[in-house]
Length: 470
Ligand SMILES: Cc1ncc(COP(=O)(O)O)c(C=O)c1O
Image (cartoon, rainbow, N blue to C red):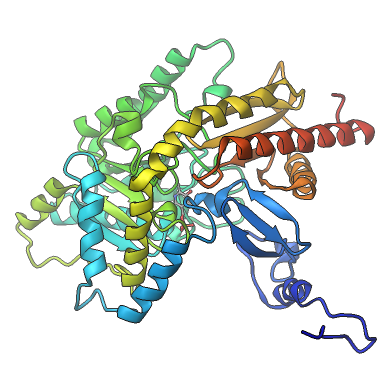
């Protein structure tokens, strides 16, 4: 095929052009005002397995699996076939008036994996809408049960639950609310359960007791009759892969049960294999939530789908209430989308057919290899569980201070790693690694050695520029 040429005769780089087109017309998520609607982010043109190819033709390990979502990896043929087959069989049917076979079949399969009686699902279009659904359901349920004041929502500093108004109001990461409005009066924030940042000299056990006590005091202060739900990621993902102290989630669960507060486990990241199980709440943490929200890995990112698994007992209470005509006025055009549900079924086939076992088998090696990076002076802690981990950089290991130049560090490591063949997802001064679950030991070796080189180059650069003493 003859090359398309510019007026000066030079071959036109069509692939680079799309990045410029994006700069001219696309508003990217989480932009800063100074660049909004005018950004050229890295151009990605292809994906296969755990790799993506960037605009320069470099093959990069997809360190964050997209956004913790491409669990079965890129270019998965069975899923591609399902997308085509389902689109040809039935591309859409309205969940307002009809039910499609894939959505019904999937609901039964999901129910088989949930703890306790969480055997009903409300499908959404992603994670934010799943959390939003769970919260609106809590409000509706309390209205129907005649306790309209029991609606405050408890979340944690460091958490992330989405970008719709109410779900975003729960977020607690630095900068989340600096320039954005939120339903702050509806939300109470507890401390972040990050053992790495516990008060100096305190044991992890005492830290855990302190956190549970904080929730107990909060319930006493606001009154259990004013608190409707506690929402928690079993492992805080975007907050930096924060694995809470052992016993923390069980303690919080018990307080919820004692005070009739719904425990909503936001498993948008931790479900569908990231921790080696379809859902992690019970299998990994031994807790039985009232609601589990999910998205991302349910379709491995091949189709936007999410949902909320809801306790049968809770639904029964509503059916038995005095307000059988009260309407849960909530639904999305793409709830129960037949293509999304069919993709989720094929995705589940792959997970059940060996990928969950592979993830469980590979996880200890993944964690151990990443842990070796702790010998680098810039690295304060490597932590994680399953196939999710975070490398946190610190300015001073003795005090574990975050780097004053925190933003710089993530960006620099990312830039070096991209040159070397790894896509990093820098979260300020933290590098989060959550590759597709298909990752092999040899690929983990590559990932870790590139990350080591990227961090080493960043260290050298910071010292050379006089920004860090090393
Ligand atoms: C734990 C958690 N909940 C909710 C969301 C929001 O999901 P979505 O971006 O699909 O709306 C995310 C996204 O990263 C998440 O990590």
